[in-house]
Length: 368
Image 1 (cartoon, rainbow, N blue to C red):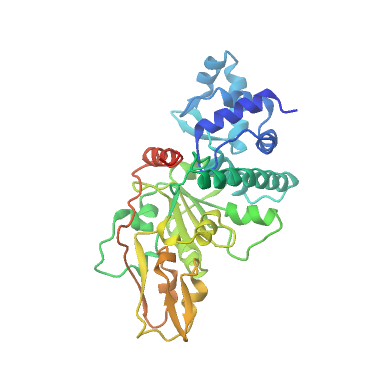
Image 2: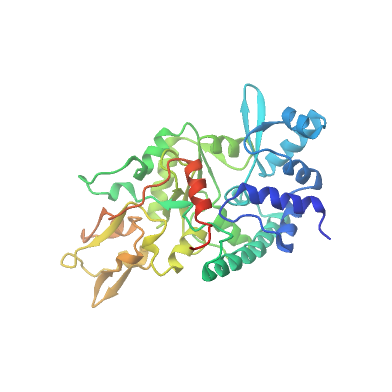
C-alpha cells in the first residue's frame, strides 16, 4: 500500500508542471518510492516555489535546520532538487519530473541495478501518461501533458546563407559565447534506452547544461564543466554524426542544449511520427532544393532525421511539410543543390522560462 506522503508528493510535483506532469496512479507512486525516501518526500511536499534555504525550511516545518540541510543535500546529490550557493548559503528548489528529475538520473551515465530499475519505472509511468494524453487530445478534453513545444530545433549555424537576417535566438554559438559556465554529460535519452536494452551507436557525451544548470550538475557529479572551445567542438562533432541541435524553447537564454538522434530522443521521435513535423518544434529556417543542381547522390536522404528527403527518379525530392530546418542535409550536399531559407511564419520562442511556462499551461486547456 502506498504511503500517504507519496500521494501528497504527487500533488506537489503536479503543481510544478513540466512536459510530463505527476499523475496519481500506481506507476507514479512506485517511481516516487524509488526516488524519494519518506523523509525526503515529506520535506519536498513542504518546499515553496523557488529557492529556499535549509534554515527557512526548518522554520516552515518546525524542525532542526541541520536535519533539514542534511535531507536537502541528499536530495540535491540524487538530482531531486536544484541547488545554488549564494553568500555562502545553499538554496534549494524542487525539480519538475521532466525536465528535471528524469534527466538528472540518467545524465550521469550509470549502469547500476538501481539505474536499470529507475529506467523501467520511468518507462512504465511514461506509458501511462502518454495514453492519458492521447485520449485527452482525441476527445477534446484538457490534456495531461502540454502541447506547446518545450524545446526547439536550432539549425547548423554555418549552413545559414550570408545575407539572411538571423535573429540572436537562431545562433547556437551565441548561447555558448554568453554562458558563464557550460557542462557536458551523458545523453539521458540514449542512456535511458540503453538501460532498457536498446543501445544507440551515436555519441553519448554530448548533453550540455548552461549557466546555473551547468554549475549544479558539476557540483553534484551529474556532469563536468567544459570550456567554450570544447563545447563548440562537441557541437561540430555532433553535426558530423547527424545529430540535431535541440534547446529549450526560450529566446533570451537556454539552460540546455541536446544533440538528438531520431531513434531514441523523445523530442525527435515525436516529431518524426507526426504527419507534419515542420509545424512543431522547428527552427526559423527550412530547406530549399534546386532540382537542376542535384546529382542524385542520396547523401541528404541518408542524413535527414524527418524523412523529408526521398529519392524519386534518381533525384532528391523534398517534402517541406516534414522539414524541421536542422540544416544537416545542407552540410552533406556535395553540389549545393540544398540550401536553407527563412521559414515563413517562423515561430518566435518565448523570452524566458516564465513565458514558456505560461504557454505550456495554456496548451493544456480543453478545446473550445
